[in-house]
Length: 279
Ligand SMILES: [Zn+2]
Ligand SMILES: [Zn+2]
View (cartoon, rainbow, N blue to C red):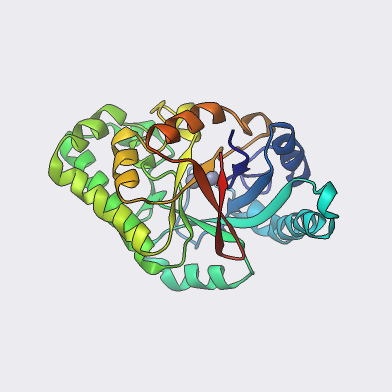
């Protein structure tokens, strides 16, 4: 059974629930370790149609202090009465043109870990609107290629510990994405991104969030799991929960899926140092 979840959000961004309610729900769902990975504030000019920048900026100090307090509760509890272990993470958007901003964010706090996410190609947040994907196959293919280039570049920065939802680019075009992967040259683009993660000491996230989205597939899909297993790339598990009901949701399925590829433990990070937890 999976007992570590390194990816969740709160009402400080576009989630629905508080830090303490998310922690309580994770414990109730059988988690032993919960990493909070609230979205990092983004630079100006990188906007979603439904933007939460101001709210996040205003709430960020409170987010940090609430998560730190829960983390401390585990640290100070006696060994025979440990509560849920809470870790302080951050989900950081990767922007090729904003590396100084990202490096400042990475250095701003003793994070337990950073999730690196590609949600934007240039200034466009590609995962917000299905209508944006009403485009030709050629345009789709260029986007897939650009996405995996960005992922490789993110790994090369060596700022991140985990690559979140590694094939989220399929969100609104899963059939075309899977057809694109049929081409060996394209699969090689993906493999190169995963090899860059391995080289950087990163882990790859296996996320239930894809099952709730139009793609209706775990992130990442089977062929990418096979590549990751062949590279012995460590993995993490993620609910990417935005409310209490999503904590632990479909985790049995994630565990079976990871086992199919030979995985028996998942990675977590404390003060950026890697540990493994069996599942
Ligand atoms: Zn994300
Ligand atoms: Zn997330």
